[in-house]
Image 1 (cartoon, rainbow, N blue to C red):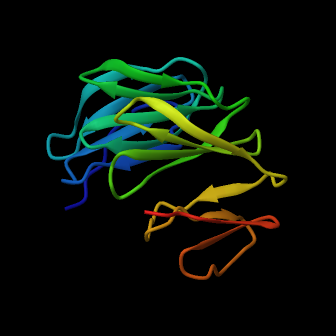
Image 2 (image 1 turned 90 degrees about the vertical axis):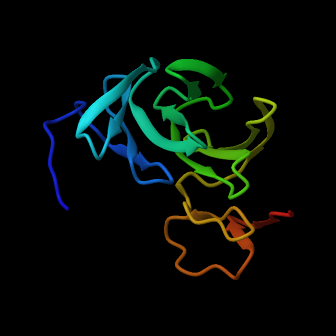
Length: 170
């Protein structure tokens, strides 16, 4: 079934669908994100994120997580801020969740990536690199794969990160 809606948020550039395929986080350039019900075709909740345009979104179980162009990562629970992280100096370009559902990764314009322990609600580590353009793969296979935008293939379990190699250990 295909359906359309009116424009939800100006400059929308991020969307994340929950595990059940029933809700979507939609974010725009006005620092506002919304939880949209796909079956009902309406907004369930509005999240006033603040801190610039929404750059990415993921689900932490049933909790929305959003990042902004000012470097903020926020976790919401029931429409309220549950955690706020300000580790990046500049925009957060992308987010990714580990399959365990407990570890979040963000990558920023400041040439760093940060791992967060969402259970403890704290950043675990931040690594700075000498490369500027990254993508975080939304597909985790026992490792977080951080790729430079021009790299096409990565050996299983390894991540080329300029001249460094990191391995996710479970």
